[in-house]
Amino acid sequence: MKLKQRENGPWWCASSMHRFFVGPEQILDNIGKITGDDAHHIQRVLRLGIGEEITLCDSHGTDYQGLIQHVDKNLIEVKIVGTASSGTEPKIQLSLLQGLPKASKMEVIIQKCVELGIYEVLPITTLRTVVRISDERDARKKAQRWQKVAEEAAKQSKRGIIPHVSEPVSIKQAIKECNADLKLLFWEEEKELSLHKVLHSQVTPPKSIALLIGPEGGLDNSEVELARQHGWQSLTLGSRILRTETAGMAVLAAIMYHWEEWE
Image 1 (tube, rainbow, N blue to C red):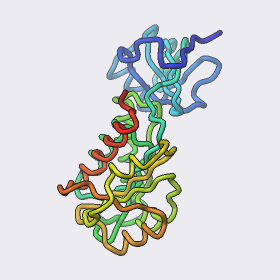
Image 2 (tube, rainbow, N blue to C red; image 1 turned 90 degrees about the horizontal axis):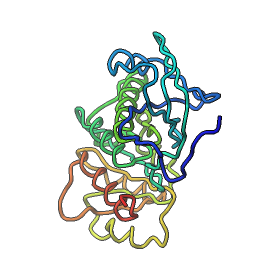
Image 3 (tube, rainbow, N blue to C red; image 1 turned 120 degrees about the vertical axis):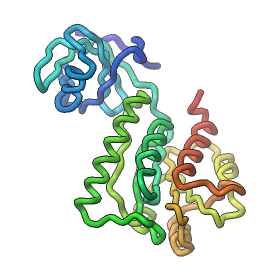
């Protein structure tokens, strides 16, 4: 069967269809298979039946139009009838290194940054982080919850991928291991270099950008100095102090606007 294709996005009206992420291995011979919670959601909540249209995304930027052809207790089989690039992924891969905030702020940060186009989120512990991770089990449990938030936000905003949210790591590890083309640290003590200056100094858009935001108490001078030693630029966000849950979203939106990702 030859699938209909279109380079610049779906030829069907994706906004009218329910969207589900699947692994590439779940699409074979023009049949997509949905299992687990999504299969239950389709049957028990959405109450979709045979012949109804849904959209599958392979988490790598490709969308598949499908028709439900088989419904079982824990399995939905979908006949693939069309494929296209999702057309929703930014050309620049943006990573957010976020100092762990208090309460449920991390979930809000992840949700909104996924909507805005973040590629991955790396929670970090710093000298001034109030929230503490008790052990590996605690770290894994938090990361699983955050990943679920990212998945739901990716579905809602019709992303072509589910941005990855990692388990928390130390700021020292994050600073040293980051290999983005452009590494930007936002610090309230910086008075000279601004995001506006840095973006306008780029002749062409970098392929990847890392953004480092401290927790509520900000970053320690020693952490900023270590980052500078590893190629990070410290930037100011102007005369007003932004909350940790606001800063990453504001920077991400500004970068998207600067490189016309909202066109």
